[in-house]
Length: 162
Image (cartoon, rainbow, N blue to C red; front, side, top):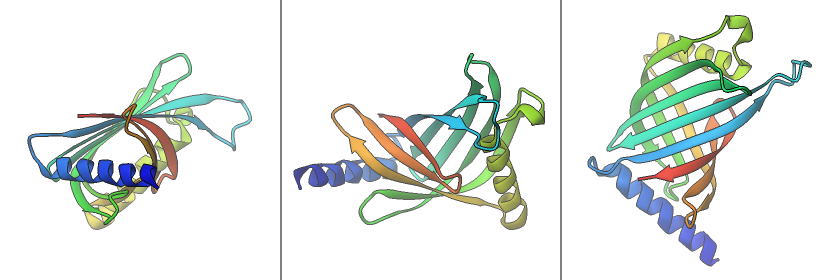
């Protein structure tokens, strides 16, 4: 029970810091991506950088192959729309997007193609792209969290920085 209490207190602190414009909350996240439809065994790495300052949000997806070559990136800016009462679920409302592809579309990771497609669809139809970030686990001692990004259904390990 004390771990849950500690987690709730820490998430409360993160929420409080997101409301203070002078103290940004930053997360540097990573995940190894696998394409189940691709039998070649080609792997890519995803790095996600999230910065929340006040209600403003910057989200950067960066993709690399196993040799470290840049495959492309997607950068979005928007606002923090809401935070759940237990401070575990953050809803973001992204208004702008910029993409950079370093390889031919056929070599882009499926995840990048999906994020590009769904965000463009929402931005063109509604003028914004909503996504959520759910903290699944958090280790305050090591400033580390396991986070779920939706709608991409991506789980990342994240370093928490302030």
